Length: 382
Image (cartoon, rainbow, N blue to C red; front, side, top):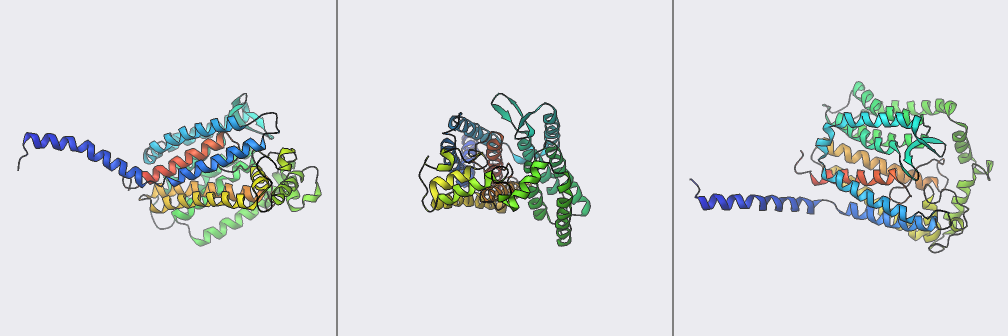
């Protein structure tokens, strides 16, 4: 039956309204608690950075707030872009990231013994953090296109090559800690993509062998960190100083802490890197066990949200992306919190949303935007 003119016009007018309603419905279904948790952690981090840097020549609160604001802008960009369309440019983006990793070794700035920053004055960008995004997208795109229940050895080798190339370039800076952070991403994505048990056993054995061989190529300061981890009293005023002071800070917090900006280790300037790598020790000293428990609850909620997005994604690419970033966040959190109490060797691993950071803050918000973008498009991208 033919429509009358008035019916056709009213139908056309209803289309934008229905599309808008569908769009608002999809927005409402997104797990926004993930972003809320990230902002809560950022608030705790900014307050702790302010306390940790109060006795330093430079007060970092203003800078941290500026980087959080920049991170929110990056979040909006990555959330608004369709991750499937981004994946179409995965290889060119990855190549650009590799070029940046090579260039920084020649023209980059040196921080902490590693030539790993591009920057002018106090403003700098670490290409290793950008390469995490590029590597995750290319790896997810490659694995999403594989067929079969399990990956073949050739497919596993190609996936490892995608990850090992940026790792090798980062080790050359040298920044071993930054390079290690790529491994959880690789492992998690391979497990989700499908890998046989015997290959896992082979991989674990290979890691043991590589670790043994790696000892021979480590720089002396890296060896000292491992030896001091095994025996902090070996060099209490040198390589063992950080972990000893960190343990003192964590232990002195007891149940409720010493109070905001009343920590002896941070305000007395006994704790090195207190606004970056050891910010969790400052938090523990000032807010005690209760403050630590609350912060870990926020992190647990954040990781649970990432896992929920991964499980309810309707396409393989989205699931792999969410899992890759989930593993990266989880390893950063586990390693940093274990580091401040001397359970793992000290290395430059920051804490997501808490540590003062430039590139890592931007990475954290960019990854969060991509994860929520997967959730937003789960009914569209199948």
